[in-house]
Length: 211
Image 1 (cartoon, rainbow, N blue to C red):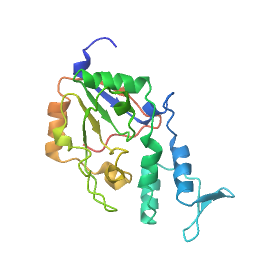
Image 2 (spheres, one colour):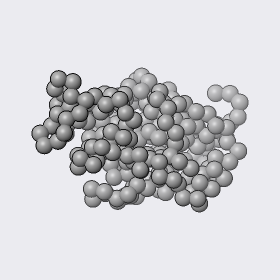
Image 3 (cartoon, helix red, strand yellow):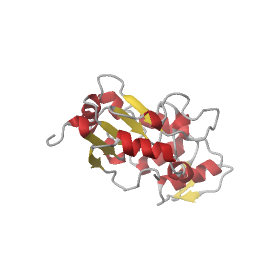
């Protein structure tokens, strides 16, 4: 790592960061199949089937659209997604992110896994956006402080964290809901001020929540 000191870095991580070895978290297709099978769906003749629900073909649609559809069907899948991504062996990208945080830099991610936390010597400061309460879970339930608390050395997890399924954002309405003006001003004017933006994009690009 050269150039600006790590304390001035703003590292932005996407899903591809956690697919590299030794982490090898599943791709969306693999995660999708595992989640559906764990909640009773089975592949049959090129379609996914479960008694009492309409069958559907292997989808080539964004993850948030698929999860939004399952939500409308009343399928509880958040716990299974969280369980699939909760255990992880950190890779080199997570190690870099942990070092940036340790030196007072900032890391923003749409990932919900715990790769950066696992690579850190101590639990890093974290912040996340609240999602509407559902399934008995509060909006964050205290696991992630609000985005307004983000500052130097903070890991910002825009889509929640795998420790608590109640924090996870899945649907387009949750992912693309605009941030409050005061949160935008804080993130851009304080958490990201005078920082060098270094991106590690996901393999299928998707923007951060609308700001």
